[in-house]
Image (cartoon, rainbow, N blue to C red):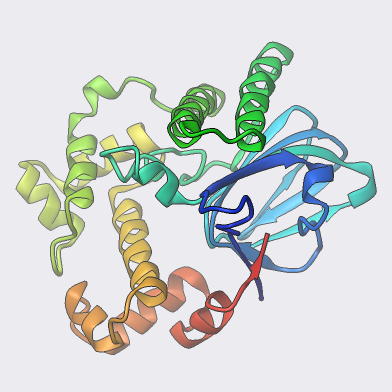
Length: 289
C-alpha cells in the first residue's frame, strides 16, 4: 500500500500545517488505489461527483462538503480528477499538541473518530463561513511571519471546533457534555497514561460506575463505546512506538500491558488488517506531499 508522509520543510523551515487549492496540490493522490497518510486531512469539496472509500465505508461526494480523514486511515477515491475542485488543509497532530494541553483534542472529535461517515454537508451560509476561515489559514501559510505559527494554531482550532459542532448537529450526537462527566473523566484517564492491562471494567470501577453506564455516556458524548476509545488510544500508542521510538517489540509488549507478543500481534492485525512487519514496511519509507 502506498503511504504519503507530511513534508515538514516545504517552506524552508519546519511547519506542520499546509493548505491550498487543487492547483496547489497537483500531486494529491486521487486514485482508485488503496493508500494512506501520516497526517490529518480536511478536504473542502467544492464541486465534482464520485465517491470515497474510507476503510470499509463508501461515501458519495457532494459539493459544499467537508471530508475528515485521520492519519493512517486507508482510502480509495473514485472520481474524475479533471472534473473536481477542492480546497485542502493538511496538518500533523504535533502541530496542535504544541499549543494545547489536551493532547486528545482531535481524538475527541467524532468527525475524525466515530461511527458516522467522516463527511459533513454544509448549507450555503455555513459553507461561506467555512471557506472564509479556510482562506485566512491558507493566506497565513503563504505569507509566513514571525508569529504565524501561533496564529495558525488558533485559527485551526477555531475552525475544527466550529466544524465539530456542525457535525454533531448533522448526525444528532449529544452536544450537551455537562451531563456526561463520566465520559470526559474517562478521556482524561486515557490522556494521562494508559494503565497496564486495564480493561473498560477496570476503568469503570475506578470511576465508581459500571461498564454499561460508562459505555452509554461515551456513545452519547463521542459516538463510540468506551471499549472503542480504549482500543483507539492503545493502537495510537502502538503505532507511535513502532514508528517514532527505538523500543523493541518486547519492550512495547511490556510497556503497554499485552503480556505476550502474540496478543500484540493479534490486536494489531485485527484493527489494521496488517501485520506489524507489513505496517512498518508500508509506513516507514513513505512519499512526501
